[in-house]
Amino acid sequence: MTATPLIRAAGVGLRFGEIVALADASIEIREGEIWAIVGANGCGKSSLLRVLAALESPARTQGTVTYARKEPLAAQRAFVPQRPEVGAAFSARDVVRLGRFAVGRDDAAVVRALGEVGLLHRAEIAFAALSGGERQRVAIARAFAQVDRGGVLLLDEPFSGIDPAEVARIAGALRARARRGAVVLSLHDPGLARAIATHAAILRGGRITESGAAEVILTTANLSAAYAHPMRNLGGWIVPELDGGR
Amino acid sequence: MNPRAAARGFVLLAIAIAVAALLRVAIGPAASDDGMRLAFGVPAGEILGLRAQSVLSAALLGGALGLSGLALQVLLRNPLASPFVLGVSSGAGFGVALVLALAWSLSIPAVAFGGEVAGAIVGALSALALVAWFGRAREAHDPTTLVLAGVIIGSIFSAGTMLLEQLIPYGLRGDLLAWMAGRLPELPTQAALWTLAIFAAAGLCIMWLHAHALDVATLSDDEAVSTGVRLHRLRATLFVIGGLLAAVAVAYAGPIGFVGLIAPHLARKLVGPRHADLVPAAALAGAALLVGADALRQVIDLGTGRLPVGVVTALAGGPTFLWLLRNGRWAR
Image (cartoon, rainbow over all chains, first blue to last red; front, side, top):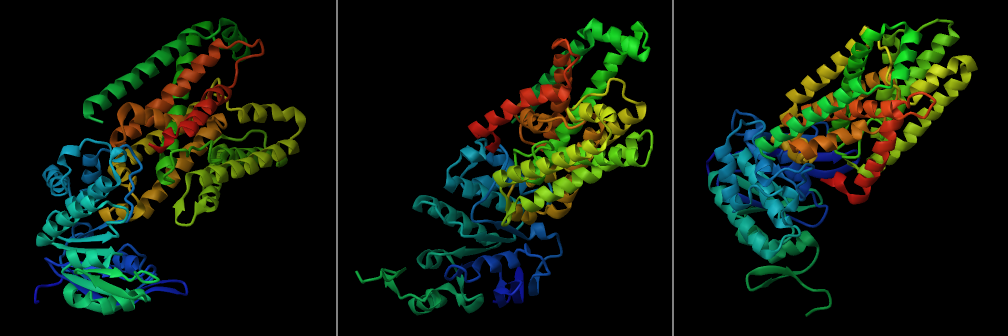
């Protein structure tokens, strides 16, 4: 692929004193791509996302992260944490509108974003009154509104604690959005990663051990190594072998 | 909340202030006013003017406390934050007491309001920094931990103030004791009123100009930064505004509790969560509460003089705080 990467990370790392959370990671995110970052707990998935999103202090990071466009960072990437928080009685529409803070007010972009996540009919409901899955979708819509002109969405464990129907809705919205941008998401479920992602990176001990096309990277052998646990293919869905056998 | 509902909230606040102000001007006990006339040589015809000045004094003070409370609540992402609960008022009080004690030890007969303000600012910001540092649990400011840290640090500063009080000769303690109870000055100097007005107006303007950023700051830190808010700069601004307004208020009238806590909550109920509305509404709610408390204390006659306004706000605000805590209303 020859398109200019929306984000290019070269040899990036993240340290907390003596603790190395991420080391020498390189990745290029291009338009149309959905990247799944997979690996065991504490392997550096969130660290990689935060470094790509430029959320970490430069004093802690190493390497370079380059964004393609000459415009404010807020217009080029948006980050959604595992548990979105809103400490005020804002409605869903208000929360999505906050995404336009640095890129200019645009109510049409807000409506578009709410429509993309299927929550236009719930726009006036208080964020606190929404279900967990709906809150996650509102947070994603906030990110959609922020990078409405195309950009990279960085999502940390967006499916954590979400029921399968909500997972399907969120995944659908992300796939649709990737047509005019890119998506990078950390995931615990390798089967889900293979279902959603076009590309994947496997992290182990803070380092990217494998990266490339999802169907090539997300194999039972690679994932068994990543999780230090045997995995098997169950009808196309990669799942862990249960301890003690079936 | 839609704009019409917010406008209705502002109208209610304006009515509340107007009613409280009218009551304050109309119902002062005559005996006290005679006393004031005898004590200060004020002609009877000027009593209404003085009462109007008291309304202005209480309104500015309440506005400053309301804004300080709102700034601290956003700064610490904690709806239970306020200058009184977090010990900032106690820190400012210690600063003022320290200045007064130093002045006495150096045989300086009177301390200018500017000296008290300077002492209060150092004390308030020191207390706020200590609370923020001790109350920091891992990466987030946990509401309960912060309040506990505020209570302890406030107690330490209060103990320090009482220690200083012991160093001052008995006959000179009266003013300090009255001030510690939270008392609106009967005849504030023009300099003190102007200082209070300038700080309150500056705090109001700066916070209102940051209103959109304050909205975004209600998101998690990562989301706010990702959205483009310069969170460290915003928090530094709120730290300074919250601390300075509390300090000036304490230097002016002593530690007056709960107005800084209740006013932002009242404002949220009336005008909604958007800070473009909430910032002026918190100032107006603080003004309404304190003018109302000042009016209320005029009708409470215990035969021993008027109650300090700080006693009225504590008696009304304390139970409200407990109600907020019990019902979890602060969480929304």
